[in-house]
Image (cartoon, rainbow, N blue to C red; front, side):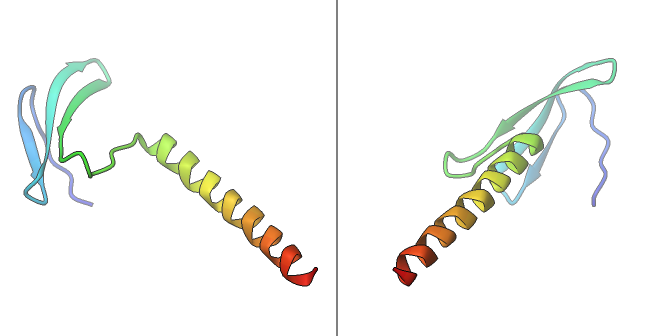
Length: 72
């Protein structure tokens, strides 16, 4: 992991096409702005993990249904 210090209105660039800017700092909360191409998905980590779990559950259900259909 790379750890960087940034002040308000300072930014960092990822992969030449994603820019993360510190917009505001209030106590322990930091507001970030992200500029990226539309095809780059950006999620809060807790939302990303929920999506991954839903995808796994869906795959398990679909796989079980496909197996049942195959055995019929």
